[in-house]
Image (cartoon, rainbow, N blue to C red; front, side, top):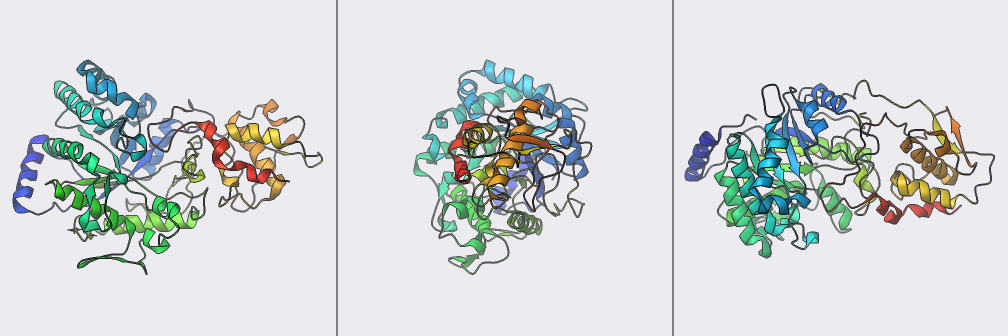
Length: 485
């Protein structure tokens, strides 16, 4: 979707408000590119992956120089992010906001540079779990950053947004949607700012989390194939959670007087592993259903024929170093595995009928670390504790793709995960003589024993979101049930 200049967009919005209609346009499909991974692909490889799959929009969670440099000249529209922890400094100092814009926007928005269209100011800063710690910084940070964009002559091109979690609003029925009472004032200020500057409202919607967190949630209501448990709201009937959630936001915006504000879905997706219901089939059905639903341009009951402006799938790649505190599925949201290989058949509606794999991936040698079958493994528990507190063992847990490979298989998987994390260092497969290197792929069925990729500055700098804390919480994620030999 083409973006209008600030002046023209303000004029269009004024006409819309007077006419009471909503602009009809075709939704665009983008992706979230996260980098919390033990083995990061080269940024240039990821950009080639985006281009090969004709993905024209990408959302970052920071302003990583490597990623932005690789995106220069690609023609891909970019949303860069500012972590919540930076909001206090940016809210209190225009010098800080000027510096941030110079270093992370102006230097890249040049001829042949990165096409930065949005700056995400914080990430879900109004989460209830944050207890308001970032709340007072959001609007002042927006105002300072807007001034900085004006100084840089970029305010008409680069728009500021604030990605919000769906817990910012609430209601038992979509038409009764309202922002949480304690957010009413700040949301009024936020949407007024967004409206004045031609920015959309960005929201993250996760039907999977509704299903995962509520045993009474109707499973078919999370998808787009129709539901035997539809929600009736007056004359409107909702057959999927996405539309119900979206219209709850529409109603909340309408209560503030901004019912026509454009909406962008900042994150939406389905994990493929790490929990019951998180699998390849469910992820394919959800994401394909979502894409078909959105690109049909049917809209929702409260916005007929007017789908979201853009949708960013969560996520492009698996991120094996994310916290598992909310659930082991957190490391498995990608439509591609960590090495850029498509997990399932998916038509993004962008010209290719199927996903195309990453090319020229620099893998480590094809070798794996497994438990030595000739050794007594009764003393293996401490080694597993070390391996799984550092590497990713989430697929071994209940509901995971490697949950049924047996005790020795579990040990081998843990050993190999640690071995690949350590870049196949020979000593990392010793485990007091219990491990051995093999050149035969030990993968079993859907349980894939990975081979690492040549590391590109693996990032363990966790982004500001309720889902990320620290890697050591993997110990608390329930990985020890499989130690019972």
